[in-house]
Image (cartoon, rainbow, N blue to C red):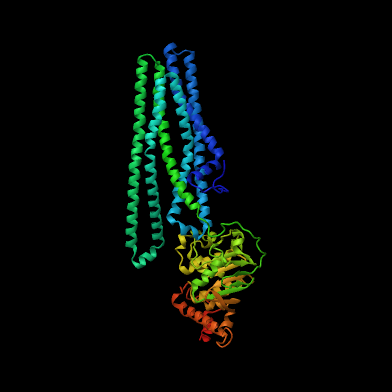
Length: 614
């Protein structure tokens, strides 16, 4: 048996739902073939049992419990045993087919979501993506679980019809023509059922999206008093889902009722015609018993055929939703790599802005608009190939878009300003690359000045974090994210506002430790905080979308206004001074009142900076 989840789910064609479903069938052809074989044997054995029972009855009526009667009885028993044994094996393969198709589809969706970046959220609502994994993949799996029974029911219909024709042409013709009519009537309801299921599926996806958005912004909603508005919207959409479900249930109820009524009427007709034939002597008593068994048995294949049509309808709708997700083109890495990665120590440069990171230097990027600097940082990490096609970012002279994405993710790590902290053990959350020792974890937490996190989380590094680490303060979450970024130990590390949510004393300690930790390795810090700028090797000042000047923090502070680049330096000092003025009211006191500051004490750094501000 193939282990699950699959090592490689493959690359499916995305021309349409049926093409995708056919590809899934080919990918699990051996298991599907075994299930189909077992299904055919099981239903064929069931189909011949009424025939054997009729022979037992005729033999017993003619000669009593003689040897011939016992032979037919033993054969009937043997067929029953074979049917039971093969049915058990077939059920195992049915479940296996269901799991393979569902897991393969789920893995394909998960892979697309993880690789597509922001492109997935730009094209599809969150609820639709979640529903594709939570519901649609399992409905697709049901199609392959039912395929063997459906094929077996068709074989049983053919075998039963042949046996009935051999005994009575009239009854055989009634069965041969009557069952397709019954199936056609039932299939007539499948198309409207499919339309209503599609509408319900879309309404459910919108409701899921609305619920996810409401929960993620619940604190903000409460703060502005907007809970009632969103509650009303959720109730309205919930009622729309309910109404769509009622419409589906109406069609489904008619289908279920006819699924019982029509086969029942069919049995009545067959038994009535068989009884008339037995009275006039055209068939024997045993054949009448067989015909009753045929009629009763054939109701089951009809129900299976109807159920299969319903499942196939669901699978077609779900496959369409899955294909829609799989068609999302990733923001990066959609095209194969065309260049060989440069050797370590290569220069990283953004051609659009002139930002260049010399190997082994700790550099700060300052801009009057923090969003502009953050956008540059994201460009350096290659998160949107289309947006960067005109003005590429290069590593060692090679465009990032031409390099393997997996290779870049190992060499360049970008930690944005609003990182996500997942639920689970703290040490597992910190060690994203699963290679850090305990000493490495402790050192990273020390550099991030996150000792208080270890105190606030029960069991420290072995403690459990809730969803999005909601038990931690904003400053604590930011420092945990900083420690996580440091533990990746990349060749080039880009940090966006890594200390924006902490107080001055904490920021001063982090700045000094961070510079020491990354000394000799390429690092870019997007910040306008003087506490951080005082510890970096170089500062790049971004103005008008280009690097206007560069130098050390002290050089830019001391540059006279009349010197070359003096006016730019003055504007730099204005930005830094504004950051200094804004820091006190916005910072979050994360350290204890009696905590001793490091050598780089906050008051001294701020005092030196304020003296030279214009």
